[in-house]
Length: 371
Length: 266
Image 1 (cartoon, each protein chain N blue to C red):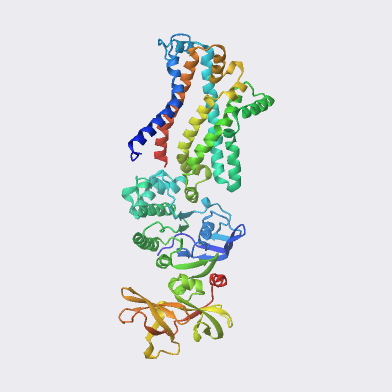
Image 2 (image 1 turned 90 degrees about the vertical axis):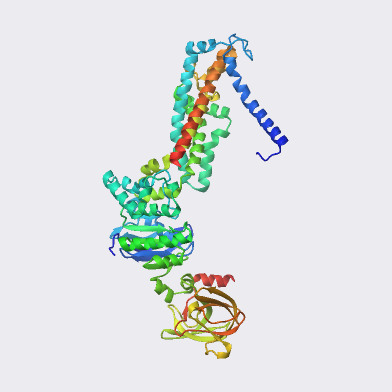
């Protein structure tokens, strides 16, 4: 991979709209050539952060540098950034070529060179036969490629993408994701990608920043976020998870003794960051780590009594919804093969070392106080 | 429409025709009158002739009043286009209550009775010595024409996606380049529409013109007004026909230009 584009450094950047804090003071460093995704639900601050990087709004405080250049107060048009918008924002009164060449025309690139670079982009995006078409004559996927070509042709220091695939149907989205990944591997342009789709983030990114409530909750590689989530929000947003409220009794080393009031049971599990004795927390077990054993087989001391209330067949996997005695439900997945019937009384436990206790995110705490 | 039962359809069509006739026939009736041969107004004319057209163009006062009207209307239109387009763009940029307030201000001349505007404008014009001048009359008509440009351009601007502006900005374009290459192509239909309305508004305006015109620079409506009070000849009908003709031609031009501009622009 050849890195083109520059690194991005964000230090203590925040944004308020009136009394609403859209983005809490945030630090973020993106390496040259990296593909970083800002992942979060709507209102999490991910688009605010992207607009600050692009220069469409100014931060209340903090500093943004692209490479060595401080761009905090620099207008968007002087930042040399390529942006792909959610609705593409293609100019409908221009042809495909004119759209792609717009940034070059504005920069007064000589027409010969401009034609050559637009031609290269058309070829790269497999749009050659559409050069003189108007935008309305293109499908959503083709428009998406024109938008990407228009952003890339100016050889930007950063490529920013704001939910660029949300207007495409699922099949096409999968295909374009792979194309984007391939394109990035080939050109290695530093890319900041905004999405609320965790699957998309997992497919595309070198690293993912999970945002919620105007804050980066966790930044890391996909497997890191999945295996070591710092709190219940990240755990719930990346992959599927079972979360059970618990009280932390004691901590020894990297493990904690936690107690569930609802289940009237205690467990010793891995402790995530920020776990303190005496506090409330969430016990996290992924569906594929749950073990279901028949009641007669005895189960371990960790066994929780449960009843199977729903079975979904997912091809090679079966998914069970389990009703616990406390009234909570859990989801378990296992390779198909066993015949466990609806209504069966079972014991539930988990593979050793696969359960974690994590802090409740502020969102969970609010939910609780509202309930 | 085609699903209506027959009797209902016939009566609906009949009612529409009656309303249209009521609106259009009195206006169109001046056309045959202008071809009257006698010096009195008969409808229908007993004999036809183009003698009054000859009189109209032979009379320097009629001829110059037509030219004054065109001059005033062109000046008022040019000013209204520049100011109205800027105002419409500005209104898109400001938010909320300020926009509502400013819009009300810009559109006020449509609501305030013209006679009030005319008196107020007349009094103000006296202080700066604009009475009896062509530019004074144009400025007066500018007041009435401005709302049409603000409205028409404002409607066209709604078709401009704010993200197009942001995209152009991100690609390195400055404000003037963005206006020229992104905004303007979409606003052309609104500007053409605003121009036609402005021109026609000024061209047939009589109240402000009566206040502002000097003896030497009467506009056509002022001249018609005076003539009807002094001598009621078919020359007046000729003048009226000329006005109708110009309005129709302008409207046709606007219709011919607008769809093309829209095709290229939207």
